[in-house]
Every structure is written in C-alpha cells, then in structure tokens.
Length: 477
Image (cartoon, rainbow, N blue to C red):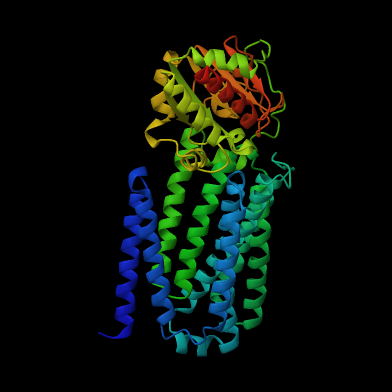
C-alpha cells in the first residue's frame, strides 16, 4: 500500500472519530468523551498531514504552532466566562480568515507557476479550481469581518442596536452579484491580468460584505448570528479542503457547516422567527418603547435581600431562570450555593434554560456546568412551562426577552409569538436586575410590572450573597 492510500485511510479514521465525537456531544453524560474523541481525530489528521510529502518546510509550521499554542493558553486562562461569546465570535472569524488565506495562497501559487504549469504540477480542472478558490475567499472573507463586527457588538465596542440605512440590503445584494460575476470571470478567463482584477474585486467585496451583513442585525439576535457564522466558518474550511485537495478538511468543514445550520434553525424556531427575519428585519432598531397594545399596566415593586430570603425560606418549589445578567455578575457559583441551601431547607430546585438565553448557544449550560450545578436539575423550556403554575418562586437572574409576557400578549411587540419561559405564572417572581433600564435588545419587559413580581435591584452576585448569608444565619441559630 502506497503512502497516499495510508494517508487517506488515516483521514477516514479521523473523520469517523469526528462523527462519533459529534454524536457524543449531544448528551451531557458523554460530552467530555466526545470532545476528547474529536480531539484525537484532529490530532491524527494533523500528524498525518505533517507527514505528507507535500510539506516542504516545517519552519513556519513550527513557528505557527508555538505562537498559536501560546495565544490559546493565554486566552483560555485570561478570558472570563462573561466574555466567552465574544471569544467564540472571534474564533469563528479566525477560522474564516484561515480559509481565506489558504485560497489566497493557492492563487499566489497559480500566479507563480502560470495556469499551465500549475495544472501540470498539481493536476485538476481549471474551472473547478478557480470556483473553489473564489468560494473559499467569499465565505472566508464574509465570516472574518462579520465575526469581527459581532465581536465588537458583544464586547460593547459598538452599539448592540441594528445599524440601518436606506438601500442597505439592495447594496448587499448588488455586492454579492458583482462578486459572483467576478468569481465566474476568475474561473473562466485565461488572462492573468483579468484574473487578478477579478480576484481583487471579490476579495475586497467579501470583506466589506461581512461587515455590512452583520450591521443591521440587533444584539438580541447575536446567539443566532454566532451560530450562523460558525456554520460559515465550517463551509469556508470545506471549500479550502477542495482547494488543497485535503479530504479530512472537507469532511470536518462539512460537519461544522451542517451542524451550525441545524443549530441556527433550532434557535430560530425557539424564537418563532425565520432565518430571513433574523438577518433582514433589523430587530431592535425601533424597540425603544413600542406600542402598549396588550401591555400590562403596573409598577415596579422592589424587594430587599432580607425579604427575598423570607419568601424563599417558605418556598417548596423554586425555579431559577438564568440570563446574561448572571454571566455579567459571575453569579453562577452563588446561585449554586443558594440552590443547595434551598434543598437543605426542603425545597425542590430546578434551573429553566431557554434555547437563546445569553449571548451564544448553550451559554447558560456552560456557566452552570462551570459552577457544578447537577445536570439533572437543568430543565428545558418546553418541560418547565407546564410546571410553572406549581412553582412557589421563580428567580429570574438577568434574563429579559426570554421571560417577557409581551411575546404572548402584545401583538405590536417585535418578539410577539416567540416562545418564552412563563415565569409570570409562578406564584411569586423575583427578578434580579442591575437597574431599571431595558435589556440588551432594548425591549421593555412586562414581567417586571406584573402584580406577583418583585424587583431585587443590584449586582446579582452581591444581592444573592446577601440572601445566602441570611440562610447561613438561620442554620447557625
């Protein structure tokens, strides 16, 4: 068996490990094993690729390996969980940039060799090669700058509100059509000069389109955007795999791309919106106050940590509903401690998880897992809602849109029809909030005005520590 066949067999083994690992990631009990299995598959793919005879020099590979490892270690240790959504967005962008550079490098090889010598040396169909280089640049460029802009929104470097102007979508469509024409010209022309012009056109326009593509999308839709950009980074990698004829890169890219699309559609369904609506509606642009049609009229009723303790001490059914506010205050460990004290006091505790709570898919699950909250206490939205009328207390920690009753009662609300966790149906609802402002999407939350709701103002970690202190004082007395 020659070396090429051995390499392909190793790639098949790596692909099988990817698929098995991805399947195991679907269950909490096997997620760690699945992650490790996928890592082994990637290690195998990297080692086999480095042993391939096409690698002529390891100098830059070793330099990149050292630099990348150093940056990765620093990021893993320095980046807080509150900044993880931004980090994921940035990593998606770097994935797109890596694919773009692969396509660019391959075009540089074509210019250096000339088409005839390139095809004689590396074989292949010139039209197909030109089209996959175009797709790699197109998808990689959009992913890179789109992810950078998403990072800027999540990090607060730019406003989380949509940025829109007249003719914006028309301009984006026009840029896409120009890039498509440039891509076809690049693949079909035999002129090096025209090919360079076409390549430059779709390279520059792809970078611009990524930016303008994310600009009109509101901050409240960032979880969907991150999932979609993750899918695009996978598709860019798959296109890069075709460019360099690497089978395992094609398989891995397709797995990331398709799983990202599936997750994106699941999240859109969780918001009762289509992907087109998410990408083009500019959700949140006019969300300031909106109409009051169907809105509940009431007043904000504050509660102290001491009174919160009294309510929780008498409760026997308690559900925590976490949101981004829990991540901001790093309150997950205090929440877990409070949950344990409630259980010791005879209460049954659950954590209700909305599919789009936080700033990235699975954000709340990650935070609670970090705090060692038992996985069996996590309950999905569809499972907790029928039980909500039985809950003595619902504790909402920094969540906004995912518990807003306007989604069911106010037809003028931008989130009307979005499935929510029905915290308002609990006997008492305690909402932790820093102040009286709106959430990240800019929408007013009718839950805060309902008669059974009390507002516990302040940093979530600090106020919950006050409640924990009351429970500990009771146990000590």
